[in-house]
Amino acid sequence: MTRLLSRRWWLALAAALALAPLPASAQNKVLLRVSTPAVADDWHGKMWTVFKEALEKSAPGEFDVQVNLNAALFKQGAEPAAMARGNLELAAISAFDIAKLVPEFSIFTSGYVIRDPAHLQKVFNGPIGDEMFKLVADKMDVTVLSPIYLGTRQVTLRDQRPVKTPADLKGVKLRMPASKEWLFLGEALGASATPLAFGEVYLGLKTGTIDGQDNPLPTVRAAKFYEVTKQIVLTQHLVDGIFIAVSNKAWKAMSPAQQQKVKAAAQAAARFNDENRLKEEGQLVDFFKQQGLTVTTPDVEAFRRTVQQAYAASEYGKSWPKGLLDRIGAVK
Image 1: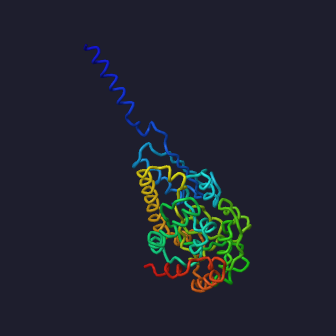
Image 2: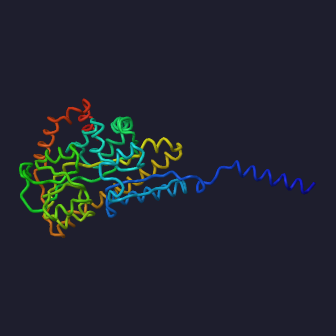
Image 3: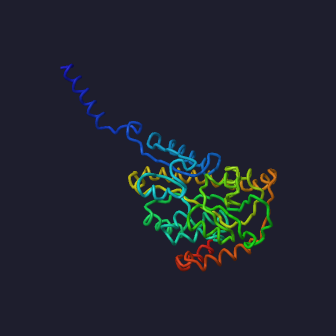
């Protein structure tokens, strides 16, 4: 009798164990491949480590986060298409990437629309952001998790020259990413916009293939562009935001709890990036001067007028929802 009870007890225990959910470590992990053109020393690159660590803490064993820096997995600008195809789960996509498929979003590729980093956060974390991100989800098959501050873009030049107005950039081969939206901005600044991949910019400046490039100051330091340039022109032409986004395919395959954890990790990464980037930006003018670069401030109002006039007369300006520019400007 005792032997029979013992056998029944073990059978019951085995059945209970069979019905119990497997621990996360025993289940298939959710694969999250990340592609970014950022270099390891840039806050834009470091933030993905924060994202990965935040998920490991909040959801141990649930996710397999694979971070690919230096455009090693997909070239800059190719990430949205890869996400739509299901070949990539996560990336930080630019307004320029989005504007290719969501013309209304081109308003955020226009120079001198967003005033400063605080304005950027208020615009994208409010009703305007909700409306625009819904368009992105519907038209691009990706879900935006958080806006992040890439920096305020400035012009750096291989050789020194007096620059006060856009007319002073005439003939300057200014590197821009290879899309018509980026090239339009370069032309609006008065330069001869020249497409070139980010990974080729350093050599292009060194050899004279290009005369200059535009990027936020933290990126200039992280990519060591200051080694092959002599002047920084503080045009402040674009308060640049990029957007941590996940493919809808990957997003919809997650449970609501997993979605919440992934979004919280993205927001933690964004905060890390923004805080450090703002702090660094405040210190970099002195750093570049110490490296021997000349730092000049042009007539920013002249640049603003010229750039805004160019956009107002363009196909981009015509695609902007009526009243959206005024609504963005009214956000305080």
